[in-house]
Length: 196
Image (cartoon, rainbow, N blue to C red; front, side):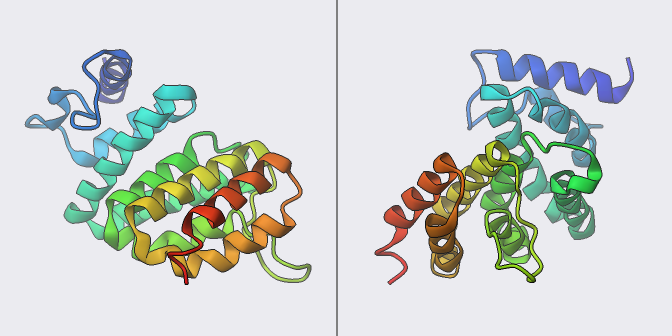
C-alpha cells in the first residue's frame, strides 16, 4: 500500500477506536521513526470530510500536527494554513467541510500561527459593508463551523478576545442566518466582560 493510503487507514481506524483521546490523538505508529510530520497532513485532511466525531478528531489531531510542523518548518506550516484558506475559497470548487475546525485547532495549538492567521479566520464571519473587501463565508452551514472554530481559538487564546469582539458584535447584529446569529450572540455573551 502507498504511504498515504496506509496512514489514512491507520488514522481512520484510530479515530473510530475506543483508545482515542485528546491525550492520544494519533496512533502510536504515527510517532515512530520514518514517519515525517508533513506526511500526516494529507491523511488527516482526508478524514475532515467525514463529519461528526471523525471530523472533530481529525481536526484536533491536525492541530497538533501543525504545531509540530511549525517547529520543524515555519514555511511548510504556513503553506498548509494557506491550503485551508484555498479550501474555504469558492474558486477552489470545495465546500470546505471540516476546514474551519482544522483551522481553529491549528490556531489554538500553535501560538505563532494564531498570531499570523487569526484575522483570516475571523473574517469568514464578517459580512463587510458593500464595497469593502471580505472573505466572508456565505454558506451558512459552513459558517456555523467558522463560529465553532473561533470559539476554540478564543478558548485557547483569550488574548484575542478584545480584538475579536467588533467582528462578533457586527455578526450578532447583522447575521442573516438565525443559527449563525445565535452562534455570534453566544460568543458575545460569553466574552462580553472579558473584552471590557
